[in-house]
Image 1 (cartoon, rainbow, N blue to C red):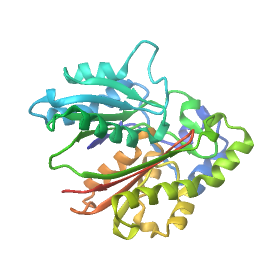
Image 2: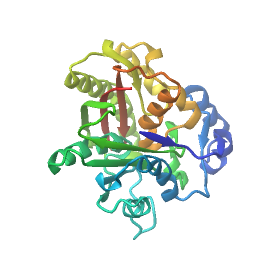
Image 3: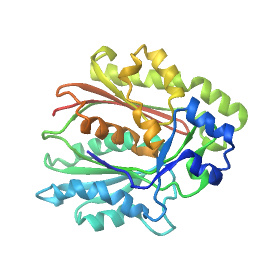
Length: 306
């Protein structure tokens, strides 16, 4: 697994005029929701954004033809002009001649974890124990509608890539749990009542999904080293932390202020950051979470193998 963030750093004050945010709204995002900085590069095309971490992984393969699937998980359905297939273009750029390249979008920001699970199922069906899949995430905050979830979060730019196999020395996926509540399928277009109901049930549904993943892995929260969350904001996590009964220090929220919410990339970006900080313990269990508007709740348990 590897991740990439563009170099330009913007404060939320700098993006506020583009997003139509008043000074009180900026204070809300900073003081209540914990956001501060974003990575944004308007000159970096989406293909270059996602190719950067993916190329690092492919460069380390002795035989790139082992990659049988390339799955591009993204939140916004239209990430490129009509007729341009980012997944196929990425496979071509990386020289993945045997890879079946396609996108996964319908679970929004929970799509990255769904892609990992999908790849596991696809590889199990190939009958080839040496086959691999490559999951990539990353997209551009190209418009105010794509960048802002009103009163909730602001999107930054990041990308990630993960090689998936049925064997090898990598970290182990022990379980995956997902639930979709279609009552909120309108997402950012929900009416006021829908927004209120979604917010009221958000923490409970995410906590239940996390417990389901833990049960499927045969462990409890006491066995988890750290929760590796999505970066929507810090305020929503306070209620989830309370419902789970977990120590707040065991939920890695440092990247909320540093990067904002980066669509499907958050759990991967956070995990790579923890690895770079030397905070992953060999044999330790880590609980990934993600929520996609619409509304899909997802959780996954990984065991770090060093």
